[in-house]
Length: 191
Image (cartoon, rainbow, N blue to C red; front, side, top):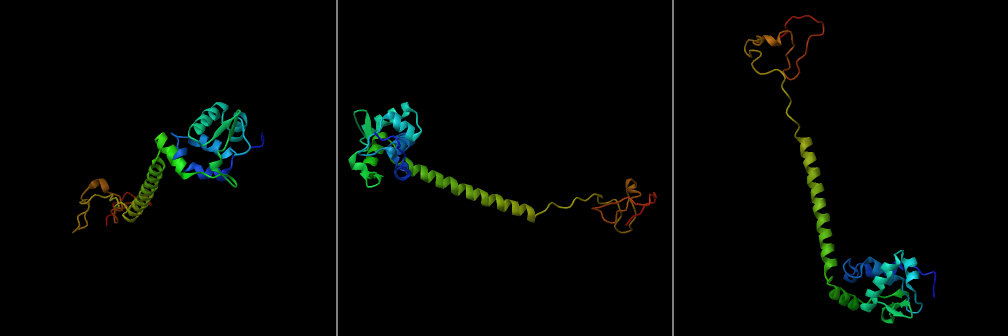
């Protein structure tokens, strides 16, 4: 029995994207266990739990499912990778068998739908970002109109005479920026 067992990341990557390892089928746990199996050197549940970082109960349940669907073999308390799934460097997934497992578990096509949904979400997010940045540019291009502080009609346009006595003493040459004279004199200065 091999005690220094590790999960092959190459093997894990080969099966993770398949519908057979979708959440509702074998799941990530099943994929991790499958990637840790060897066709010649069997492992018991305790060693698989240590190699995968999964709880022993989870490993036991997943091993039972892997055996049920022909993705693992169990003999004398040890779990093996079936010879038809073994390659030169460990797991060599059989696409037909993985498709059969996905069909049996009802997960066939879920991976493609998930990839499409995620692609759509990325596209909508990029569109949202583009629209948001365009909106920010438009806001910068069209500044707010200046606030006129001196209402129209305070000064007679033809004579320059002050009509509203409330503005007496203010310098109102610029109706957007009236000022009070600095010298402190209360004289009315009108534009």
